[in-house]
Length: 92
Image: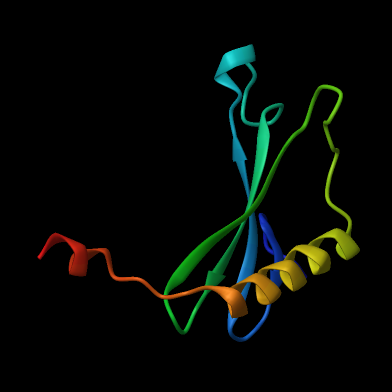
């Protein structure tokens, strides 16, 4: 059984859907945006994956399971291409 807001819960990570109000159109959290993010439990990292509106021409009622898997695959592919950079090194 899925806990509220959790789209996918695995050993190493959780994908969460978070409600965000649309203050520009004075919409509540229920009618606003959905923010999808990944929590990597072992690395203590949070990664933004996607945001979508509930209303309007690009509004979605919900993401389908294959959409969630696609977001996860995109994250894994892009994570492999990332270059680590410590901004503190530039302030020396």
